[in-house]
Image (cartoon, rainbow, N blue to C red; front, side, top):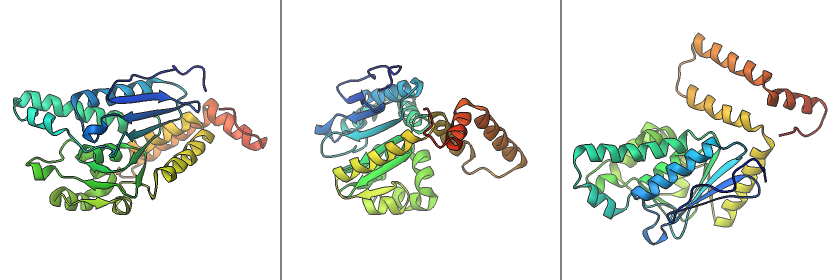
Length: 270
């Protein structure tokens, strides 16, 4: 384990957090009796954990899971009922807190891996959409069920539409029909649909090994490339920006070490 990494992360009763011996942050939502449904406390705990991880140096990956039978069933119904009595300003502030938490995951410079199982509804789908790498265990059932409650998936929609595209969003936002792990993979919400949790852990291990072989700063910059360039027109300005970025990477100590190690036929020192 990297001695420069703090030994612990912000933790709470609703979110278990640890850093393992491979410098991987492991977060587990811990409301199994409520299918890890969102409450203000869980939203705040997730936001705090990802903010802390973003500031740490040396963390190689984040793994996000849910304790118990489900990954996350979206918003807790008691919480939603209470929100129905709030005024407009309170509801806007609450929606902003959820959006800020999702954005902290989406923009986290450390590669994030999410594992979906059991019920994955509403905001749970949003969490999966924000992850860089996502796995669904075969028994997972996904659903964007908000319209059945008279609301919409507004706050999660920017992230979900980025993941699955507008065409699939038209179907699942408006029908609220459930869909399987295989369908989640087909539409791009997850990268792998696997049979068991053991299979998922094996895939996570393989991804973490690959990430460990890559230069950590280059991984962070590669994620930034995708966020900055996705959907943009290829203009002269964008091409110039991309040339400037590769020049910066080549001049970076990581870039120099990577090239030197390749030429010397040895493993790079990172």
